[in-house]
Image (cartoon, rainbow, N blue to C red; front, side):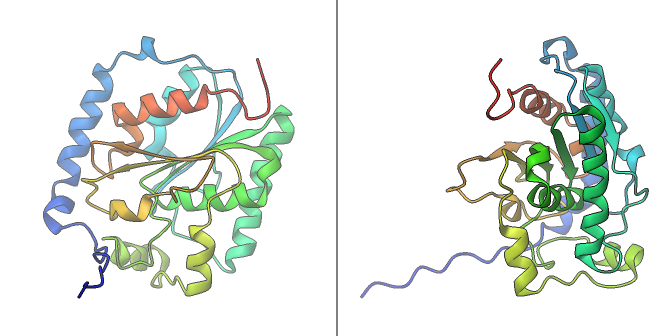
Length: 244
């Protein structure tokens, strides 16, 4: 008699991994200064908008922003300051973020690449679904778009900065799981101490989606040398439907 195979339950990373996050992030920061920037592909100048993670703002993304600007891209902040999670109605919140993206695309008369770290990646993905004709691609860093909340170690932090617990019902979970209709890259680490790496994986049947594994912490993703190389490579790819 065959026994039914049961998929292992996805759980939050261990407290041991979470505890060494700051130390590992410092090592990655040092490694960033040792990497060969000359080997990175030059950009074509198209606009890029970067979205910070929970309890972070543009200051946490300075290394990533500086790298993209040095390659020749027109880089923009998300213009919402400190990320405390969606405020009010989520659709209205996303509409306001999408308005900023539309403004940047109009200013440059070019499609925009969206990069989101952790929770910021959720915003980037959802905006790409709303404004797909204006979005060139989406790149997420440690974004748990398959999470219902229990697979992360940030529930307490979300409550601290937002005042309420994150609520992901069945309808919202199905919505977040859907991959944007544009080229999408999900960068993740199996040694992420904040979110379960399994919640960052795109569906294998997604034609324009790609999962890319790196070695590193969650906190250090915006300056992890591997991440910077991958981001530079993805941004340098030709726009879908446009030949050089």
